[in-house]
Image (cartoon, rainbow, N blue to C red; front, side):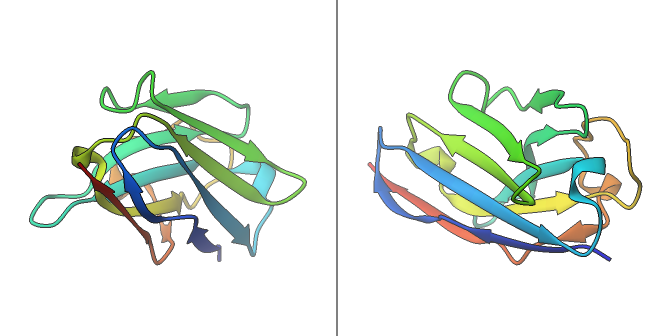
Length: 125
């Protein structure tokens, strides 16, 4: 079992930055991929970014050049640094982990078994 807790969301202005954190417990953090997803009101959940055990990263087109995913294995925490935020980034952001170790940087929600409760990000224009 993996427990994931997101934090760092809030209300910001367009153009501002936020850093989200995903604190993990329950299994060997350094061995599994962590993904970030988001869901805006009335929309389906969408992939944002993922980082795997080897440090390989994968980004959605909407995140490339603005968002950076990272991890600190000593702190069992993954991060999503979000810059140049705009109103379209408003959503609940979730981190997730797959069932298995040593996987690729999955981009589909059904490839992840464990999910956090989410943190709200609201960008005012």
